[in-house]
Structures are given as structure tokens and as C-alpha cells.
Image (cartoon, rainbow, N blue to C red; front, side, top):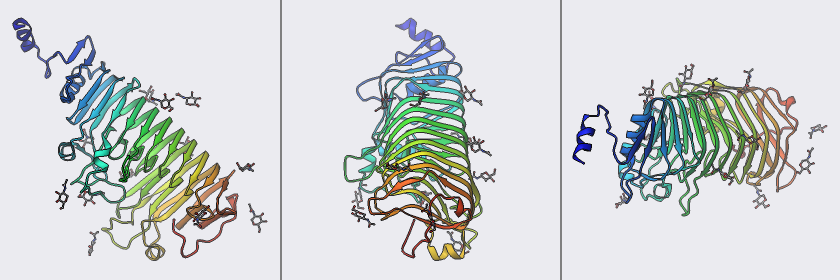
Length: 418
Ligand SMILES: *[C@@H]1O[C@H](CO)[C@@H](O)[C@H](O)[C@H]1NC(C)=O
Ligand SMILES: *[C@@H]1O[C@H](CO)[C@@H](O)[C@H](O)[C@H]1NC(C)=O
Ligand SMILES: *[C@@H]1O[C@H](CO)[C@@H](O)[C@H](O)[C@H]1NC(C)=O
Ligand SMILES: *[C@@H]1O[C@H](CO)[C@@H](O)[C@H](O)[C@H]1NC(C)=O
Ligand SMILES: *[C@@H]1O[C@H](CO)[C@@H](O)[C@H](O)[C@H]1NC(C)=O
Ligand SMILES: *[C@@H]1O[C@H](CO)[C@@H](O)[C@H](O)[C@H]1NC(C)=O
Ligand SMILES: *[C@@H]1O[C@H](CO)[C@@H](O)[C@H](O)[C@H]1NC(C)=O
Ligand SMILES: *[C@@H]1O[C@H](CO)[C@@H](O)[C@H](O)[C@H]1NC(C)=O
Ligand SMILES: *[C@@H]1O[C@H](CO)[C@@H](O)[C@H](O)[C@H]1NC(C)=O
Ligand SMILES: *[C@@H]1O[C@H](CO)[C@@H](O)[C@H](O)[C@H]1NC(C)=O
Ligand SMILES: *[C@@H]1O[C@H](CO)[C@@H](O)[C@H](O)[C@H]1NC(C)=O
Ligand SMILES: *[C@@H]1O[C@H](CO)[C@@H](O)[C@H](O)[C@H]1NC(C)=O
């Protein structure tokens, strides 16, 4: 024993090998402390020791009550075959989760570096119910969090490149399940997400994925049960492929919201969404952009930029309120939006083979495409949507390419809202 501790004292590592981080060559296996003790420092130690060309093994049940900022990683395998459960300690996490510069989002785990592979069939459990049920919760604006009650994202792939995340179950997220932040070439596949509340408090803002300032992102073969966007393309998301998703209870596959801040430029381009099953949802295929604003300091519209080359194809809806919806006056007063139309252009948007049934929530309306400035080159083919409330109707406004929609448009009624 004395010899061992003397030896350990000589090791020049920031984190000495200990009984709970077994180091075997470049493989670091974290052994749980048990008894509800925080395994976070040992997880960080494993990343520190095996974060360059190594493998981190998380094959047991871990309790994590320390924010995980694992940055500067290079060529790392993360074998998560066990369960990482974040402590339900709001008093710790709200101020100590890592803050990122978008909608006050914070995270439990900021995974960052180049050429990273997370796999193993394990689980991230973020104990969302205690957050959803918290009595005095405050939320941010437009789907954001708040700095006073900061609800962390279970897994953020941030400032990262060439990442594959696969075979993962994520349960009970207090906020967005996944955040792709300032990253390029990230693939997610075989991800099972379940953020479902067991009380009357909804699993608020439990988006499956939010993507921000990122490119070359693929999300495929995944199942999402939640209470907000299934996937959301936030400002400066380009070159994304979404395929084979099964979304239940969500708010749809959403572009936006964009154009919220005057003086800011938001771009969403080159998005291909293919083969989605969307059930019991508020929206199916959705684009939401704020209207314009006369105020240079506006935080509720007036931003510039564009949405371009977005295709939704092979998209089945079942009991969905708004199967196809484009709103360029999002969260903007209708009269104000008419006077100050959006300065964020929408063009080259294609809906191909969208079929199924609406919920009837919006009566017979199954398509609602309302642009404030004119939208260019929006097409729809193979649309086969029915409403339980009678013959389907299609509302359009300011669509330059109306003749390229395979249904007849009606103008919005004054009472219609998207
Ligand atoms: C919630 O707010 C009420 C009234 O301000 C206060 O009495 C109570 O202690 C708060 N509860 C929590 C958990 O912060
Ligand atoms: C960020 O948090 C502050 C303080 O809670 C809040 O006022 C603001 O609306 C939040 N911003 C967003 C975008 O949610
Ligand atoms: C991510 O990158 C930005 C810009 O390079 C940097 O300012 C920020 O500190 C990085 N975040 C983390 C958590 O490393
Ligand atoms: C994307 O990342 C994966 C995983 O690291 C890698 O195999 C692939 O070559 C990368 N693609 C490009 C275009 O760099
Ligand atoms: C996800 O759920 C599906 C069906 O419920 C199951 O077949 C699959 O194995 C699950 N994947 C993971 C990674 O747990
Ligand atoms: C994804 O699912 C499709 C359809 O079920 C299947 O053909 C494909 O092999 C799967 N891809 C991966 C990477 O699992
Ligand atoms: C988006 O990209 C454009 C063009 O590079 C840039 O001007 C703008 O500031 C970016 N916006 C955000 C929100 O990052
Ligand atoms: C449109 O986006 C798709 C999906 O990212 C991409 O494959 C295609 O090349 C883009 N088309 C153009 C003209 O950029
Ligand atoms: C914008 O500026 C005007 C006057 O310059 C001010 O009245 C208003 O409160 C400001 N709005 C915001 C959102 O800061
Ligand atoms: C649509 O029909 C359902 C019954 O099938 C009814 O409950 C609902 O109120 C109707 N919605 C509208 C907007 O008329
Ligand atoms: C539209 O969908 C209905 C119900 O699924 C189906 O019976 C019908 O054949 C479809 N029509 C076309 C043109 O595909
Ligand atoms: C659209 O309206 C025109 C003229 O009333 C009619 O000939 C055509 O069949 C309608 N098309 C569809 C898809 O309902």
C-alpha cells in the first residue's frame, strides 16, 4: 500500500490513476463509486488520461453531479454501454452547467474535439421530471432557457468535427435532448429519445435535436417521444440530412425560428428530410420566421438572412395539427407583419410525397403556407393529406410559385393563424 501510494505520487499526470479509473494501455475504464456518490470527477479523469487516441469505457451505472466539459479530444472512442444518470440537483446544475451563447442554453456535458465516436447501447438519464415539476420555474423566450433557471442539455456536441454518436438511449431531458453547436460533420444514428412527463407539467422544450452554427449533420434511424420539436434547425445550419425518424408527440421537424434579432443574419440551407413518421404532433414539416421590425434593436423580428434548398420527402403524418406549415410572421402581430414584412427570404422549398391525416385541430386546413414578403420556388407534389373535419383545404399567401403546388390555394381568412 505504502509502495503504491509512493508510486502514484511520482506519476506526472494531472489525474493519477486510481481504483476508480482503471488504465490499461490507452483504455480508461471508469469504475463507479456506488452509494450515490459523484462519479463525475472520475469520468473527467478518464477523458483526461485517454483523450488522445484512447478509449473511455463507461460500462456501469454512474451518478454524475459534476459538469462534464471534455474538450480538446482527438481520435477518441467512448464506449457507453452503461447508464450515466445526472443528479436531480437543480441547485447545483442551474448555475454550474456550461453556458453557451444561444438562447441561454447550458449543458451537463460538452463533448468537443476531433474524430470522436460514442457508441455502446447505453443510456443518458437526465432526471427531467424534477425540472418539469419544479414549482417556480422560469423559462426563456422563444423556446430558450433562462439564466435564473438554466435547464441543461444532456449531451452537446460543441466545437467539434467528425463525430459519430450511435446506439444511445436518452431519457428525461430538462431541456433540448441534443445540441449540435458550432460543429461540422456530426452523425447521429439509432438514438432513442424519451422525454415524457408523468405529471401534468409538460416536458417543456424537450426538442430531440437543436442544430446551431453547424454543417454536414446527419440524423438517422432514430425514435423520438417528446413534447417539442423533433428536430430544429436554428440559425446557420447548413447541409443536413435527416432520415428514418419516428417522432411522436412532438412539434415537428422545424426550420427556425429565425430572424428574431434585428441586425443579425440567419441562414438555413441545404436540408434534406426523408422518410419521417410523425404522429400526434403539433406540426409536421414546418418553417418559422419572424416578421420584420422598424426597430434596429428589435428582439422580436427584423433579422435578415435566408432559408434555401429545403426538401421534405416521404413524410407521413398521423393526427398532426398542421401537417405542412410555413409562417413568415412567426410570433409577430399580423398588422405589424403586414406593414413590416420579414427580411429573411424563403426560397427553393420542396414538399414531396407528404401524406396522412391531420388532427382536425385547424379544421379542414392541412397546409398553411403564409409568407409576409414573397416566397420563391416553393413546390409541392404528391400531397395526399386528409382532415377528419371534411374535404381538405390549403391556405397560401404570397407564394410566387403557387402554380407549382399540386393543390388549389385559398387565401387566409382573417381569423386564421399559423
Ligand atoms: C416558490 O415561490 C414561493 C413564493 O414566492 C416561495 O414561497 C417558495 O419557497 C418557492 N419555492 C421554491 C422551491 O423555490
Ligand atoms: C435568458 O435569461 C434571461 C434571464 O432569465 C431572460 O430574461 C431571457 O429572456 C433569456 N433569453 C432567452 C433567449 O431565453
Ligand atoms: C467554443 O469555441 C468558441 C469559439 O472558438 C470559444 O470561444 C469557446 O470558448 C469554445 N467553448 C468551449 C466550451 O470550449
Ligand atoms: C466525417 O466524420 C467521419 C467520422 O469521423 C469520418 O469517417 C468521415 O471521413 C468524415 N467525413 C468527412 C467528409 O470529413
Ligand atoms: C430503440 O428502440 C427500438 C424500438 O423500440 C429498438 O429496436 C432499438 O434497439 C432501440 N435502440 C437502442 C439504441 O436502444
Ligand atoms: C437505417 O434504417 C434503414 C431502413 O430501415 C436501413 O436500410 C439502414 O441500413 C439503417 N442504417 C443504419 C446505419 O443503421
Ligand atoms: C450566420 O452566417 C452569416 C454568414 O457567414 C454571418 O454573417 C452571421 O453572423 C451568422 N449568424 C449567426 C447567428 O451566427
Ligand atoms: C440541396 O441540399 C441537399 C441536401 O444537403 C444537397 O445534397 C444538394 O446538393 C443541395 N443543392 C444545392 C443546389 O446546393
Ligand atoms: C429599442 O429602442 C427604443 C428607443 O430607441 C426603446 O424604446 C425600446 O425599448 C428598445 N427596445 C428593446 C427591445 O430594447
Ligand atoms: C374537427 O372535428 C373534430 C371531431 O372530429 C372536432 O372535435 C373539432 O372541434 C373539429 N375542429 C374544428 C376546428 O372544427
Ligand atoms: C391517398 O391516401 C388514401 C388513404 O391512405 C389512399 O386511399 C389513396 O389511394 C391515396 N391517393 C393517392 C393519389 O395516392
Ligand atoms: C383546382 O381548381 C381548378 C379550377 O377550379 C380545377 O380545375 C382543378 O381540378 C383544381 N385542382 C385540384 C387539385 O383540386
